[in-house]
Structure formats: C-alpha cells, structure tokens
Image 1 (cartoon, rainbow, N blue to C red):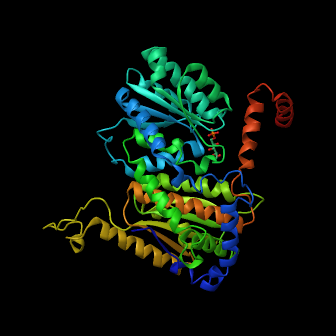
Image 2: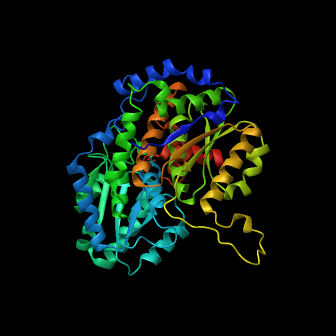
Image 3: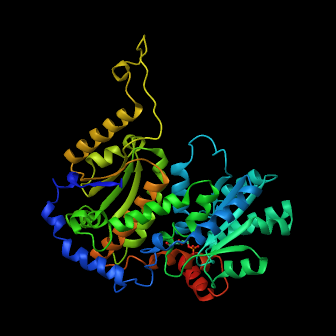
Length: 445
Ligand code: PA5
C-alpha cells in the first residue's frame, strides 16, 4: 500500500531523536485512552472508528441525495461554518480544476461562513434566475452565520421555483433531534442527514457534513473514506511508536513546543492545498489552544508567501517551526521550453518540468529555514487525489488526539468559541440574553 510519508530529519538539529522518542510510553498510554474512551473529552471519539463504520447503505444514501441535487441544480450552496464547512471545501478545492468548473457536476459555492453583507447580496444577485439548491449544515442547528445565509437563500429559492420544488432542492445535515435546523427541516419536510452525537464539528469531514457536498461536486467519497480507513490501520493503537506516523508527528510537535517553538505553520507548494491548511488550522487550533497553552497554528502557501511572510519565517523571532505538505508527483506534466532569444535568461531551465523547479524551491527553502533556526517536518503525499487526502485527514485527526493529551488539555471541546457568541447575542439583544445586554451596554458606555 502506498502511504503518505513523514520525514522528521529536519527537526533533529533542534530537538534530539531521543527527546522525540521519549514520548513513546506516554503516546501508547494516550492512544489506549483514546481507543478505550477513558481520557478527556471521551464523549467525542466517534471519529476514531468512523472510516470503518461507514456502510454501503450510508454511501448509497449520500450518493443518491447528491444525484438528486446534481439533476436539479447547476449550483449547490453548501451553508456552514467551521467544522461544518472547512473539510468539504478543502477536498473540493484540492480536487477541482483551478480555472473552470468541473464539467460533469454542479458548482459547489460556500456560504454561511461569514456575515459579510456584500458576500451574501452578491451571492443572491448571482443566483437570481439560476438553477440552484442548498445543503444546510449545522450540528447545533443554532449557529447564527449559517442560519442567516439559509434564511436569505431559502427565500430566494422559494421565490424562484415555489415552495414544493424548493423542498426537493434543500437538504439539511444536523443533529438527530436537537436544534432549530432539525425542527425547521421536520416542519418543511426536507431530506436530512444526521451528524452523530459523538463526532465534533472539526472531526466531521467523513460524515455527511463533508461527504454530501463532496459527492455533489462529483468526487469519489468512497476513495476518500478508503484512504482514511487505510490510515486508521497504519496509526492504530497496536502500531509501534516508531512506525506510527500520527504518534511521531504528535511527539515531534510537543518536543518542539517544549523547546520554545510556540508557532507551527503548515506550508504547501500547491495552491490547491490552501483549504487543507484552513481545515488543519481549525483542527489543531480549536483542539489544543486552551488552558492558556497550545501551539499557535497558521498556514502559508508557498512560494507566494515566501515573498511576504518569508522574511519573518527566515529571520523573525525563533519561536516557529514548519510542517510542509509535499506532493511527490503532480497530476499533470508541463515543461519549460527553450527560447532562442533567451531574453528572460531562463534557458538554463529549458526541458525541465515546472515541478522540478518547484521541488528545488522546496528543498532550497527547507535548507535555508533549517539554517535560519526553523525546524522542518515534511509530509509527503504520493499524489493529490481523494484517497491520499483521506489518509491525510485521518493522520492529522489521530495525531491531534494524541498531541492534545500530551499537552494535557481536552482536545475535543471548544469552550472559548462561545465567548464571542455571547457578546454578539447581547449586543443584538437576542431574547434570553437580557442580563448580558445590560452588562455589555454598561461596559461600552
Ligand atoms: O468544531 C466545532 O465544533 C465548531 O467549529 C463548529 O463546527 C462550528 O462552530 C459550527 O457549528 P455548527 O455545526 O453547530 O453550526
């Protein structure tokens, strides 16, 4: 089986291999706690077995719903935020053609991940007169950003096709019983998919939250899940620490953190990986940033960001390390031709593939960053396809579970996300928040 590779050699000038391997016993104990459900946050561990628990019927139901939307729609709006948004976007952007919509499927457009009035008004103008449908995704069913987007787009769709036809073009993905979206879907008679209770938003990409929009966009969800399933065996609790990629990554980043490396950037050399970085930021930032601890996660797109953040990375405060996702073999081939006049002086590259230049950029940056005091972790995907993205997702999910326990935090809650919501509701005078409204108004006088 081909698998993603993890290369830690670029961290050993900064932390010793012995230091990384000294986590082996703890890692074993933390994996055992994850699998037995005896650690912190143990009511949110459904993602561990998820890839092997998705049944044929589950796939069939998602694919059938996707086909219905594909038949009726040229555009499907996937509404959601955070874990109800980033996984699907990461896969769709990674696998879609960069400059033209995929020919055989509707274009998936994302909404509900911001409250920008221009964004929503422009989306409404764009969709006017077009054949569109909606996937409304919210586990709690009460999140404000997607609820606003849904109210506006539902009204547009009903105005355009009537209430009955709109019902055929709207699917809700939410909790089995709780929340406003569940009751709204029941009242309106929408088809629904359930987000399991024991899977938190940022771990939900392999539930209908991610799988439905990905299937609508025309990508192979079975391959995605197969990749995750294969990786779940490779990083299982019985796999020795030295071979367990997730355990090694977790140990490496905690060793670096303890050595003063408080910032981790996830870098890529392919623009299609941008949203993988966004998904990863949520997974790691929301899982570990608590109790006034945790690595700060950011993501960068190279080589573009070498011309902006490159200076800081090379010579700023030495509190940073990088994890680079590298793709061994691109899906296409493009060579740089020789040019008789050679006015641009590029003939020394003639005959080379663009990817050879990209790989030398990557290697040159790695050496420069290590020389400059930036430890380097490399994750190599054999190629960019649904199967290897599935591997990557599960690799990162397992690693963050172990890593969070190494940090001694609960990696499966997100209490800090509530603070802004409380203030926003108080400022908007939401019923039930009267005391908070009074308090915040007094503070802001
Ligand atoms: O990881 C999480 O739990 C959050 O980021 C949620 O996914 C996000 O807040 C959206 O929540 P919901 O799906 O309930 O609308």
